[in-house]
Amino acid sequence: MRRAVTLMVLAVLSAGCATSNLGRSVPACPVDPDVVNTVTATMILQMQAVDTAEYIPCLNDLKVGWSYNDLVAHRGKSSFSLDSDRLGSRFLEVTLTPACDVGAAPALAGPRDDVVEFRSVTLVGATVTVVIIPVTGRETEHAELIEDELEARSINSRQVFAVFDDDDEPLADKVAAAAGRGRPVVIVDEQDALAGTATLSMPGDARAERGLDLEDLLDRLARRLPGPSFTGTWHQVFPGGCVTYEFDASGPGVDRLAADVEEALGLFPAGEVRRAMRAEGVLG
Image 1 (cartoon, helix red, strand yellow):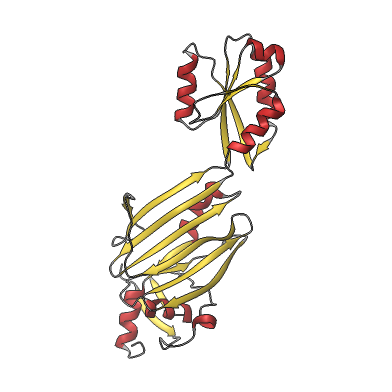
Image 2: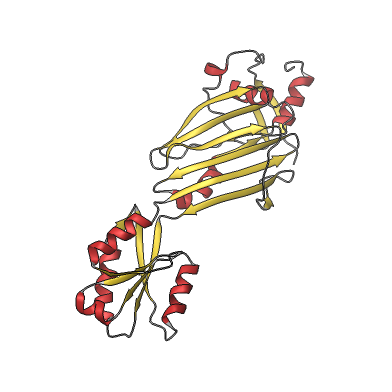
């Protein structure tokens, strides 16, 4: 369905106006995506900054704890950022440009037929799985004590889930399988069961650390495991423009961040609105 462009409120601004005050209003998406009846100052600034872009970024709604930082617009570029009480200051910067370099990121279907999306992000989730391997089965009681202690604590704001690997496969194969999935491994042999210790093997390490008591084990995990984070970029490419989402988020909430951003941000049909405004003689 073609969008109905009915401009009830126009904020017509010259490209030379100062942007420090004009970018304060949130660039809100239309309530009805098929009907555009309001164009704000922030929208005009973005449309003038990249006057070829068919779309400009907009906000459907701010999530609880999120706040908007003023838009800054220059010829050929506009940007704004978002803060979060859980994800950090400027956890997301949204930039509009005429074009962008998507690198080697794979192409995905975009939110509209004429939009192609490219994503290259790294997620460190708010949970971490630790594999516990009792070597012979006679160490099960001590291994279960370690499991209880790990799951009773969080490590660098990440909840710990412990899983037992007591299959009959060789120990080296078990460790390699866990490392291939990025999981730390706690190995408990008969000597560990007697001494109250364990061996820790971290993914990518050539050597395991042996003879660790519980506090040493927890300390090593805290020093080696990163906190939850979501970093990287999304690009939405369309005729005449590109919107880049640059993420630098850390803390609780990263697991839902992709879905939250998809819901909170959208694309405003700048090309259709611009053409309608020019037809009325109100946009240069």
